[in-house]
Structures are given as C-alpha cells and as structure tokens.
Amino acid sequence: MNPKLPYLREKTSRLTTSPGVYIMKNKSGEIIYIGKAKNLHNRVSSYFRENPDHTPKVAAMVSNVNDYDFIVTDSEFEALLLECSLIKQHKPKYNILLKDDKGYHYIRISDEEYPRITEEKNTHAPGTYIGPYTSGFITGEAVSEANRVFMLPTCKKKFPQEFGKSRPCLNYHIKNCMGVCRGRISAEDYRETVKKAVEYIKSGSAGSIERMESEMLEAADNLDFEKAAMLRDRINAVKRAAEKQKIINTGVRSADVIGIAEYCGGIYISVLMYREFRLYDKAVTSIEKSGFGEDITGDFMLRFYYGREDIPSEIIVESVPQDSELLTMMLEKQSGHRVKIIQPQKGRLAELLRVAKNNSAEYAAIKNSRTGKEIIALEELGRTLGLDKPPEYIEAYDISNLSSESMVAGMVVFMNGRPLKKAYKRFTVKEQEYQNDYGSMQEVVRRRLLHIGTDTEDEYFNRAPDLILLDGGKGHVSAVTPVVRELGLDIPVFGMVKDDKHRTRAIAAGGREIAINNLKSAFMLVTRIQDEVHRFSVSFMHSQHRKKTYKSELTNVRGIGEKKAAKIMIQFKTMENLKSATPEELAKAAGVGAETGEELWEVIRNL
Image (cartoon, rainbow, N blue to C red; front, top):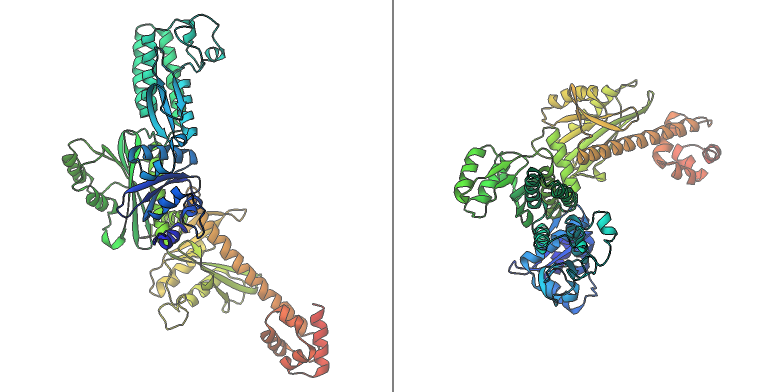
C-alpha cells in the first residue's frame, strides 16, 4: 500500500471539478503517468479511494505515486489535446503500461505515389506515422480537418490506376476534395499539398496560414486566380479549425504566461510555457507575501529567470514590472535574443493569461481548502476597491424595520469567500425613536466596533474586519465612515447598491459608485453577501415583530400587563414553546393564579 495515500486523498478532496490534465509523479519527481479528465476531482479521486477496484497495472501505478500536478483547461476537448501533447513529450512509463498499442492512435501518411492521410490503431502498414495519440477522437479530428482543409481524397480509389474511370463524387462538388480522380493533378503538386497538410497537423495553424497567404499573393500576381481562390478557401478553413486548438495551437511561437493569485498572505504563481505554438511545460510555486516587495511580478521574474537558459521571446504578464527595461536587458543578455514583456488587454494573449491565472487560483485553492473561484472573487474585489490585499474577513450590515416598529439590524460575516454563520450577529436598534436608516446604521456599527480589541470572550467580535459592506448607497457610507474614523480604526467602508428590481448593481464608495457587473467573480460574491445580509436582517425583524404581536395579545387577558407578558415571552422565547406550555406553567411564569393561567392557555392556543 502506498504510504502517501492519506496525503493524496486530502489533496484531492480540494481539487477543482474543472476539466484538465493530471500528471502523476514518483519520489524522484519523474512523471510516470499523464491523464485527462472532464472533472479533475472525480477522476483523480478514483485512483486514491478507500476500496479501489483497480486492474493490476493501475494498482502498480498508484503504488508509485508520490504526488501529482494538474493543468486546468477550459474544456474537455482542450484537455484531450493537451494530454496527447504532454504524453508525446514526456513518454511516461505507465502511459505505456496502462495502454497497449490497441489503445493508442496514429496518423499515417501512406507510402504511395498519391499518399493518403488516415487514422490508424497500429504502425504495421508501410508509411510515415505521427503519434502516438491517446484519443481516437483527437486523431480522427486531426485527420478529418487536414483532409478537409487541404481538400485531400478520402475515398478508396487507387491513383493513378483509376484516373478518369468514373465521375467525381459528391466531395468534389461540395469542395471537400480537389478531384484527384479526374487525372488533372500531377503527383508532384499533390505531394506538395500533402506535405503542407502534414506540417499543419504537426505545427498548427499559424505557420500554415503565413505560408499559404504568401503563396496566394504570388498566385494572384501571376494571374493564377484559380490557385489563389483555392488557397483563400484553404486559409479560411484553417482559421476556422484553429478555434478548436486554443491550448495546443496558441498563436504564439515562444512565450511564458505568468498568472498570479494572492490569498491568505501567500502568493501563488503559475507559469505556462509555450514553445513552437504548443503548451510545453508548467511551473507552479507559492511564496509568503512577506517575501516580495510591492512589485510582485518583477520580483518573481527576477528570481525565476536569473541564470536560466530557456527564456522565450515573449513573457505575458498581468502587470508590467516596475524595472521592466532593466529586467528585459538581463533576459536578453542571458538568452542571446530579443525578449518582449507584454501586458495584454484583450484577444488571444489575454485569454492565455486568464488560463494561467485560473491555474494559480486552483493551486492556491488546493493549499488553502478553498475553490479557485472564491480566490479569484476576493482578489478581484480587493483590486477593484483599491485594497492592499484581498479581504479575508468581511462584515456586512443591513437595517430592517416595519415603519418605526421592530427596528433591527443584521450583521453577517464572510471569511475567505464563505459565510461564517457562527460569527453572525443580530442587533435591536435602541437609540432611534423613529425610522432612521442612517442613524440606525451608525448606532449598530459603533456598538459592534467598540468590541474590537476588548477582553470579550467572543473571538469574532474581538476581531477587526478587513472590509465593511453596508446594504445601501453613498448616504450609508457617508454616515458610517466618520464613526469608523472616530474610533481610530482604519477599516474600508463601502455600500452595496441595488437597482430598481432589488438586484446588486454597483459598489458605493463615498461620493461615487464603482461598477462591478463586468467582474463576474467579484459581482457574484457581492451579490451573495448582499442577499445573505438582507435575508438575515429581515428574518430577525419578522421574528421580533411576531413577538410584539404575541405580547400584545397576551395583555388582553385580565390581570396580564406589559411586564407579565414580557416575563412569559422571556421564559418561553419561541411560539412553539409557548403553545406547548401547560396552563400551570403559564401561570407560574406570569406569577398569576390558575384561572388566569387557563385564560392565557386559551388565548395562546388560538394565536
């Protein structure tokens, strides 16, 4: 039995449910198995469960796993492409042991005068092979795309033996085949087309498009418009196919994409390394924030690249380092070629940066028993509000009342992106005689903050929040901010603004509003906080109002005044307890006789 199983199970319990690739490693850090998954958590968990039903080969692999890494992708299709690429690069031991030749797939270029590109399950037939691929789906897609884009024949006719013996098939008429069967295409031209199709399969779309565009312009200059039109259609087909290859074919030849996530005092960094238009490797690291200065990106790049030889031509970052010119000089001196540091705002590079950042967030989630979405939400919120760090401990307040009756407030706490219900607090507004939301909010926040740093046994009331959110707009923020300053506290205060349909719309910051509906993760978090604090305060208000209603009904009984009614409510607390009380228990609680107790019991039974 693998002694690392308890650790592996614990790590996997926090693994994301997103699609991706998992990479198993032995004690030496050597990659021994690479797999794909539609749901990383479910798939990886199946290896380390308590009562496994593994085949002997899988059991042998699991017994040698010391740790594993993972790369999150946007779709299962991308995970499949990435798995094939990584297996081809690393050739892990157990990818061979767990799958025999029947489980692998290859792309074959036949050894004929007019070669065909086909999908094969072995390498027995003569020809040139590309692979192996672990997925028949990926292999079939690659072959189908290459044949369709370059209009190669997929029929069973033999060339040149069957030239002109039959009419071209439907594929020719719908422009999926160049019509080799007509006998009008030379073997030399045909082989050149096949060569381009093979280059397309190996290196992706970017290089293919560049070469074909050059040929198309040359053909147009030579007045060979038929060839130019054919190349134009082929270029468009390649561009359409390229949309399916985001992870493998990135559109960048040589680049590192640095994604950074900050959480709980730690910095989590993922570097996705692309070489020859494909994802080549991934590096992840975590360092305490105290180990960095203000320029996190610059500090990390200096440490990561100093002394390295494999430096790409482009480094894609979320924020440009402060000393980017000096850093670029160092990188160019080490590598011997030009290096660009790029901060993308949109497009393909921005999408690659988002993927890298998601990987960093998921890495942080594994380390902190959270989800990647929660970490991204807190980071987005902190950055949007201009905070020094993501807010780990958030308190939110809402006032609720019925006119000037039952004026109450609710306080909810979100810690590391999740509700901390044992820290929730309810307040009865005491100082406001009439409905006054601003005055009520000032009173409640002041009463709560006065407990910070005291000897109270309540550890949560003793703690200062990283952020205060008020269910209200600029007026609420203007009312509460002076209270916080008056108490000598440095706690940021913002409001949660709703639209006409009572849905979260923006964040109020003093005299202005900050739009957050374009920040999906932060928006969802603030919406959840606002809905929760509203629910909590309204439920308290209703419970208080019901108590007052019950209390007023009790005073209708002869001999029961406000004080005796209050004694009864304090004794039994809930309506359920009140209705289950006997006449004797009611009489004792109110300090009255048996006859009055019977009257009380009758009134309560009909409430």
